Image (cartoon, rainbow, N blue to C red; front, top):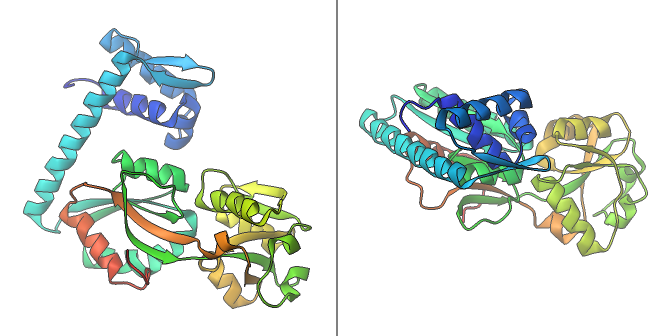
Length: 304
């Protein structure tokens, strides 16, 4: 695939893996028309149709699948080359790519990134926030080395390297009526109040759906967001309540502006944060060093 435009190949790959031009555009922070134009230019360059449009989505043609396979093979070969070069250079250089949920950013930066980046200043660290479903997809597709999310969906190509229990709690403003409750809170007690929930596709969103089924309780969302900051602000200004781990709001809880109450729901109680990689992938010295450093911090209490 020598000589082909790398940007066009990348946009084509993103459109197919995301399932639509719009989803790829949102992921890459460009206009959907830019994605479409680059794919058209690639099709003209190769003189074949690469995608079929189905509704608002796109799927690869047979020729498109062949291009994707070759593109993926080249990416793997380039990663292997970088890995071997990293081994020759030791930790003077290298790259680590991590995808995580928004709620882990503060803890990662303070407990892991601060020390790791100071110890290995030559290593480039790439950190992106995304939902649990997308984090798994990126690690499986080798678009990221490491994922850290709340309850990621099971996948045969994923290996969990660290895990910790991280129960979801009822989060409310200090003056909210539910803040006066003592002991663990049943979901039925929350159902009558406005609730903010995470969108589908995140670990939080999946847990909230499962929790309702287990307790046979319907929670009607008054507010939905893909941002923990937005969920937290919804609660802080007194509009309603939400469900988050205490880790995500520990500073507000310590300051006394929010309260975190454990629930009686078994799904929320068994929730866990998982650090995962693609099973069978050989890691560079830099990636292995990051995993070893994270293991030595307080971010994970239990390993699996």
